[in-house]
Length: 250
Image (cartoon, rainbow, N blue to C red):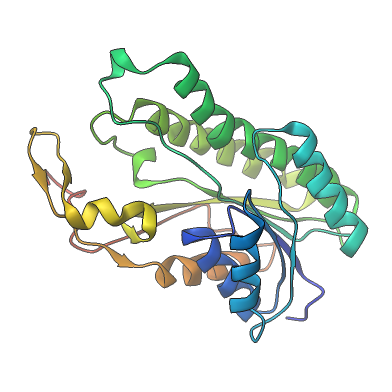
């Protein structure tokens, strides 16, 4: 694969977004790195400098104008888009469902659901009209797209909704050679999951330390999904810490 393949990764400044970006550079993509913090995006770019090419474009996923500017800059620089990884996401404070504020609910929905939808719209417009036509869109789901953790109603609801978005992309993209898939991730070792290693609330009311896995496993899985030919699609993939309490009763 040559560097003519262009990928855009949201939330590329840390964690899963950074791991995905580095893995995509390694397999030949030029990666547009986007997120809120320019300094973190530049760290990712520096880490990937020996692997491949990248472009840092800070953006705000809660601002439709900023999202539009991001895709306009991508087209200005490269003239096409082959892969979108909708990765950026946030959670809300772990409070009882009835105590979650409307403001916090809307913040999670705006970032985790509305932003991927808007990014997907921009990607569709580009991919259906470019030559060669088509591309791939991968959504970051979650183990929470299958089963919730306690006190995570907004995050869980948006991740279930992402599954609907993924299926719609896969269906509506057929006519334009656009493939849609989703990766559901469980307990990747990032800064955001550090609390799992310290002990996290379980459904029975107690807390326990949960095993985690190297986030590089996620990056490599996304690179695998991204490098399939467009006549093949990984619709759903689950990558999780082997011993995390998910399968069965914990």
